[in-house]
Amino acid sequence: MKDFIIISNVSDDPFAIDIGHMCGQPEEISDIISLKVYANTEFCPRFISDEGDMDHIGTQLKGKTVVICSAATNHTRGSLAMRNLVLARGAKDNGAKRVILVEPDLYFSAQDRGPHRGTDEQGRPPEDLKKFDGQPFTAKLYAELLKSAGVDVVITVHNHSAKVQALFSTLFNGEFHNLIPADLYADYIRYSDMVVTGKDGDNLVLCAPDHGAEPFMRSVYDTLGLSKTSRIVMEKVRDGERKVSMTVSKGSDLKLEDIKGKDVIVLDDMVRTGSTIVECCRMLRQGNPNKICFGVTHFLTSAEARENLNSKFVDEILTLNTIPAILNRDSQGRLRKKLVVLKIEKWIARFLLTYMGRNAQKFEKDFYSVDMSSKNPRWRPPSRY
Image 1 (tube, helix red, strand yellow):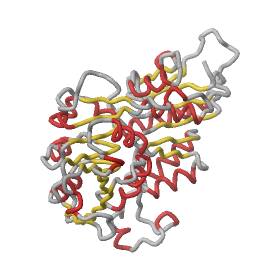
Image 2 (image 1 turned 90 degrees about the vertical axis):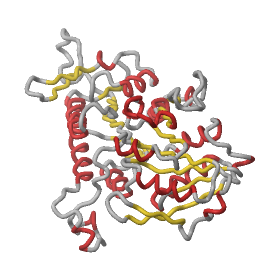
Image 3 (image 1 turned 60 degrees about the horizontal axis):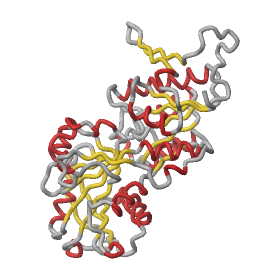
Image 4 (image 1 turned 90 degrees about the horizontal axis):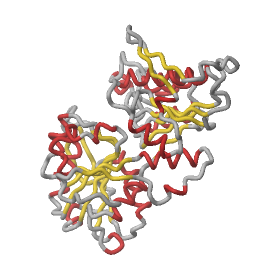
């Protein structure tokens, strides 16, 4: 084996297998590690070794880096998280120098608050703290467990929580890498036919559905490099768990009437129910744009999200496979006719190779692939796009 190996926390995980191959790993993951489950349902992995080798017991991974790819969707997140802990400990117990966790949609990171006034929650009023009374600060627990189990580096994609980012960065001594996929979106926006950008972007509008999404929208804007691209920021007010209302933010560059006839792309980090985005797009439609697209990094394909995003206010959806279930046509349901998935295995492999000092030049321009159902009107036989 090389000085690094790539494994997964489930057997036959296509996401991890593809990353392994793209990083030049000749062995199949199933030939590197056995992911056993006992009759009592306990998980017990074993790094495969030469049965006749009696000289390297407990040291077969000495000096190596073990990369755990955690993006499966056929187990609960709790189960996958526990598997990550056991795998990391197994790697370190057998001599691994370093353990890297690649988890595109970081588990428990939405549970980024607790009920105490300690250093993690300074400045929060009692009314806010009370919302989390009785709950644990699970994101912090998960970070501490990963560190204790032997994880040295955490790589994730477009994590939304500034608190989680600070927590992981501190606990892992700066070895927390939150990859922002602005280059993925910018490349597809510029070189596909999803929207008409116009001359230097004069027909394109990027939209943040709230102030939390504004940094990502600006990152995509900067990466696009189309100086005449316009930007609009919305303001949302929650009227309940699933009901929101929208207005254009007072600090926005544009008003609704300014987007008339243009193509608009709403950019956000995640979607669970889709209610916020549909309301945002409904408001944008009042400005009479030509087309409204929704670009989202983490897409949880719930029945509610499929139903909501089938709305006439959303013309097309662009997402990543950070949650790989989105690639399943049954999971896409009726959204197949408006959905495009940018597959990030090459993008992740490029980062890993660069991080480990390897040559990643082959991914300089070809750094993602596109999955689109033939139900989408823009589908055509396979090519670059």
